[in-house]
Amino acid sequence: MIYADRMPVTVLLVDDEPLVRAGLRAVLEAQPDIEVVGEAADGAAVIPLVRELRPDVVAMDVRMPLLDGIEATRAVLRTVTDPPKIIVITTFENDEYVYEALRAGADGFLLKRARPAEIVHAVRLVAEGESLLFPAAVRELAGSHGQQRGNPDARAALERAALTGREEEVLRLMARGLSNAEIAGRLVVGTETVKSHVSSLLAKLGARDRTQAVITAYESGFVAPG
Image (cartoon, rainbow, N blue to C red; front, side, top):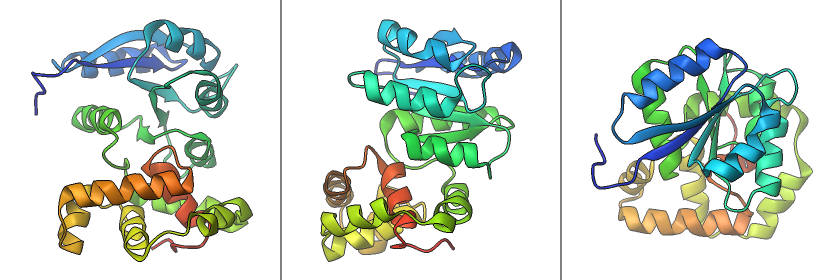
């Protein structure tokens, strides 16, 4: 789908492997609605480039020699006003580094072996804030890494949120990877109604996005993996 009436989605690539950056650039710049505005070889260079280039999305390797994707994500979200969306790039999906990056505020993750169409789709999804990337894998990460240790802060956040019954339904369906349209179909309501519920529960949970809300749902024990 081409978004001819919109400004291109701008992307900053951050990876210590030049071949990975070159491959991502070739895939993304083949799309008329995506523009790669810069590259960096380490997380330490991310903040000045984000401030200078103001990308919509940062695609960032999770493992880098000086500053990894986890700390770089934390730094961007802590210090940059109106920060970009962040996708972490990884070789292995069931990786605690990936889970920690998501907990730090990354909006999703992308496997280095992903097909070109998946890479493009992931960037567009994250730019729009519509849904999780690879929800089944996020569930697995939450189950293997999040619930093993539990999180009292997540339980407290959920208790403070005092979600309505409908908001709880929406959160459970979000945690299973359903999009707004799919949730609307399941609950027999309009998509705009679902969007309203999602916005409300994100605000109540103090979550930056759907990914953060789903992590809270799993770590609090509100939703069980599987």
